[in-house]
Image (cartoon, rainbow, N blue to C red; front, side):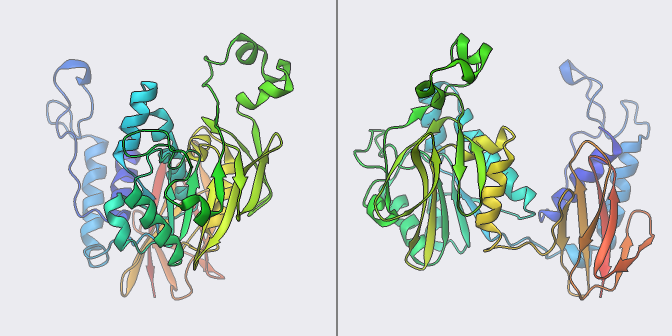
Length: 380
């Protein structure tokens, strides 16, 4: 580990609301494949630059405990998880990748929007007070969950669904109508049969070696085709795992793929739903930026972070008289960016160097080394 890793992980934990840090490990590991690794200090107890960084971070955290003691982020976005869906995915495919990559992608998109998010289970839905709820890779449409999601949208929430939502019932039997339990009428769309998109290595020699251009037109839908969105943003998204055509009942179509309607939106009571007929999270996790921009167009009119940036990832830790702005650089190169801060702050100090940073037109110019973090104290 590098000192910057210690610094980044510590302050990321603090920004997430952690009240303590436990290190693995204090001495370097003695045996096995981990031998010589992971210690804050060497095996003989000698000081390292890692332990010096950990010590300095602790001193800085204690010096700002008035800000941190009662601080907890308050996410306005949640990601719904039900472990039965991952178990079913593993039972069907021998791997949970379709499920885990979906969750990973949605979280990555929210991270890039500078938004915190909670992971919640169906038992929390009746008390959910989030403005947006994502429902990644939710194959099993439990009746109670479906009803609570409908109520959530009717009460003013924004619900984002993806392919195969409610494909099976609680016994893991294929539902005759998808989404089930009256949601097709409520949400205004009905799924047709899925096109399964095999992972690379399972598509046959023509597709894997020569590429989709050599395939007949009708076969190209199986090779991660592009989905064309017209709303809420004009973007292209590479399909992943499934492409699912839908029948429009009362929703508004918003995307097509090779002539099929594959996405829709609808006002539901006081809220709204968006259905996307592919594994959008897995597409984002695989590097598709079109999916990020699509979700940004949906989410940012509803939820805005207190601070945001194009390349760097700022997180504001607010206190009554002074606050901390943690700025992360998760890219492989040094970055510098001008970040807008709330108008009430008139002084900014880099807490690691002790140097004041100029505020010009309520913006801070911040330089952060690659894979590192800078923490700035903001005073009113």
